[in-house]
Length: 279
Image (cartoon, rainbow, N blue to C red; front, side, top):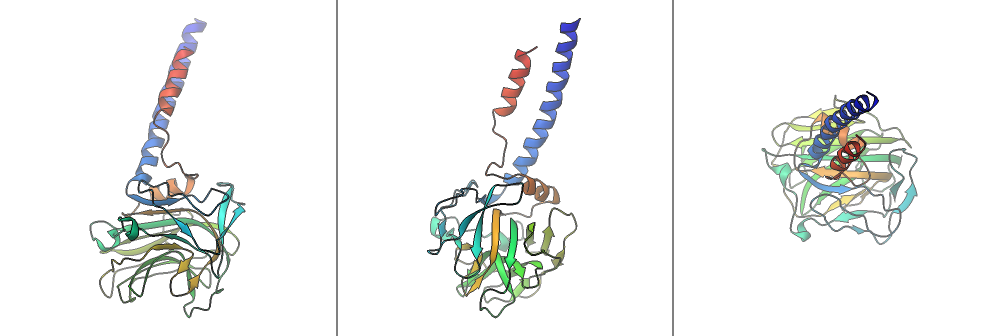
């Protein structure tokens, strides 16, 4: 009787774990769909950050490199700190033959998320009152940016090639010296929505107006805009998708860190085998 009860218990536990495990894998796989950039920034040393997305882009730091720091966010141990004057990470997608253009496709879209701890704003001499977390575009064609405004409001901008705003709302509050998870999503028909810390309701939103969304050739930059904007912040877990992600995707990505988007394929099999061996 004891052996039979133990077998039934193991079967129930294994069924529960398989059910929950497969649900977890499905959620994690959702955030990998359309993922074109994923920089955990957890190396802790060196002059490179690894792109864990399926694209596997090479990255490059500024000559005066951002510094690795220990994170006081319990979700991850390290982050990159940018000085707001000369530090950046660059990803030359065009130069590697796979530039992102989904933001210009009405049937696709663009989503950008990152953990950010803003240390100070208005550290550059640029005339605009904002600095980018993630940025793409220059005089050769302005495209998009995930922004922090001088008053610590999160925002996102999408431009036409001349730099006029197609959609660029801001709102909410990124408190100084605090970690926040900021996401911006854009579709060429619906405009921009900006989300903060996994809340379902956007802190800022704007429809589409103005010119045509620009699909230009410039690299993606972290914490820098090529005409002189610089962000003074600690940044980690930067992701970019070629689609509009859902509220559920934002929540999963916010809590899935460290460079592993999807549970290893063999883990559930191993867990099931271990339970069966004990039955």
